[in-house]
Image (cartoon, rainbow, N blue to C red; front, side, top):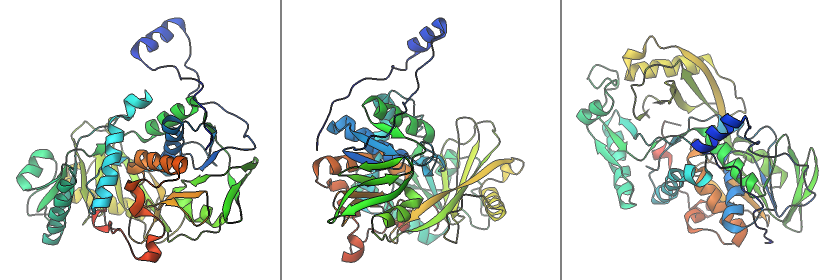
Length: 424
């Protein structure tokens, strides 16, 4: 692949810079620029969320490929990256999954310094509750797999849970009493828009073109390889095309003649009014199909299982609100007077084994970074890093070898359902 070096660096964000610009009345320049699309790029990335932007950034930063375009049909981060609950963890069930997501946690830990953009990563710990003996057995299994891969994870009892989260009802009174939990200290939450903006700003500074309001309406394939894309702003030739389109993955791949084993479901979430900080961990209950964390602004962020019927709807429902409120109150009865402010839905591209599809396809030069289900934001940095290495070198990194598309025909599934944060 042809390479070009970076052409400029963005202004460095710092306390001194903030004071200087405040005293001089000088505004910060736009974080990224607008361009007319070129007729040809070395790489076209479809999707301007965390996966697409991370791929473009690492192509430029680690491989010197800067003739790269990111095409986003809406605005950057307006899809799944802006509709998730931004929980980060690596306590998965399979060794392949643990290794992969642990690399992402490591990248997230250094992301703010690397991008000079405060991503607000708060490693406050991730606690998954067990309400049955069978759930405890799975947690012990996960903890052993985690430890063998060098990931901090352990099963703890009621007393420790009560100490970590005093607001939880750990008595025998609830319908599903808490018996124990899987404690994962490196887990936490992050500011999802800051991650998107940080990658976008850094990629732009390295020469990547970011095109918003640019929808891909066709993918040109001939002779078994990709030739480019057709957009609402014209045709673009490219020898390499990467799709990072989350819930719309199957419809985009249809344009290239590729059928994916993916079904799209809405996943709803909600946020409450701000309250005084009291919750220092992320709390998950698979039995009650709910998870909750508290943002830096004091809001409680709730999530649940995906909707039962496949669709592309991003609207909220009264059924979700009633269920999530009831389940949260079973865990934390003291929240009865807290009001929900808003709710929304994102789209999840679910595979049969709850693991992603990432790598090359039968169409030469066409790559997929899809099938993330409810795990996508956690994997943004490592998926971008691995996909950039694959596109730039033609060699599949070892970390993503288990997640190829061919596993569904070869019978090599990577079953991660047991590590889902909530039941699906």
